[in-house]
Image 1 (cartoon, helix red, strand yellow):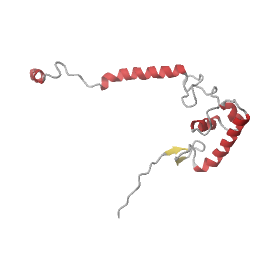
Image 2 (cartoon, rainbow, N blue to C red):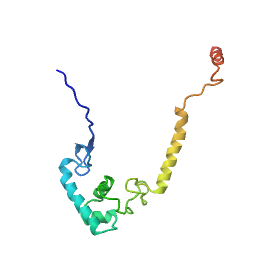
Image 3 (cartoon, one colour):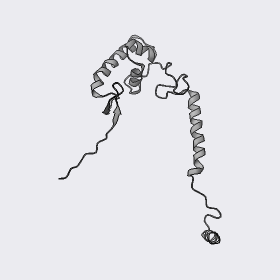
Image 4 (cartoon, rainbow, N blue to C red):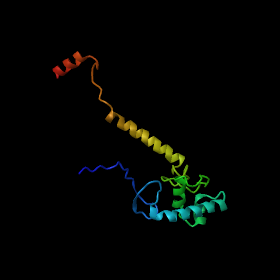
Length: 149
């Protein structure tokens, strides 16, 4: 008996609402939470329309949803990015973040970039190819050197 399986991408994720595992297709929430997510989306959209210029925290409060829900919809590009993000805080220092997707301030981003560069400089000698001593292209000299040692 020959069993063949089609190539399936098992994208197993945790639902952002109920925290149960599900196979993600295109939404950050599972199918059973989708109706609640749609209700929240409509409340958030109505809140943005009723309160133009409100930041993400105020929109969440007016719509009676969590700030995480508003941020999730902004990141999934379900909402226009016209919700001001001054209440979004840096994940390292707590200062004002650059954007909802970056979640770092300019200072912490610069520090992180410097740390990456320093780590690269530190690791480069460990993973760089070892240089041969003497003349690299002179095989006769290398063989003679090996014989002497």
